[in-house]
Image (tube, rainbow, N blue to C red; front, side, top):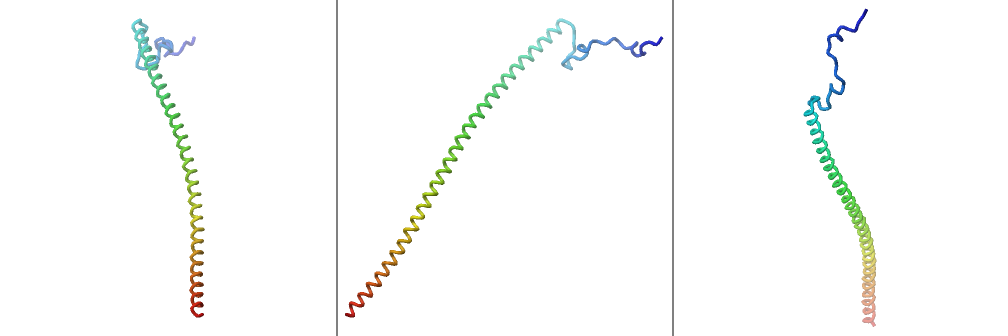
Length: 134
């Protein structure tokens, strides 16, 4: 009668999958109590390190959030100052334009007054010339 393949007859019995491949490739699974204690100690150490790293990361995250909130407040304040400076600049520009317009008007009036003075001086000279003839 045909039996199982030849290699199955020569290969040793296999251990369960959980015993074949421990979680840590460098560690070897040993059924002894001392090994179990070492494993528990390693697990406790890893748990402690994880808790410490988690606390450090939480602290860094909190600091980052605080920095982000502070920077957001500073940005908002700077944007407000920027808008205020823009408004002040526009108001100053309007005042300068108003002063320039008044100055142009005053210069025009001054030119007209100078022209009137020149006309009056010519008229006076003409009148004095006519009075001298008489």
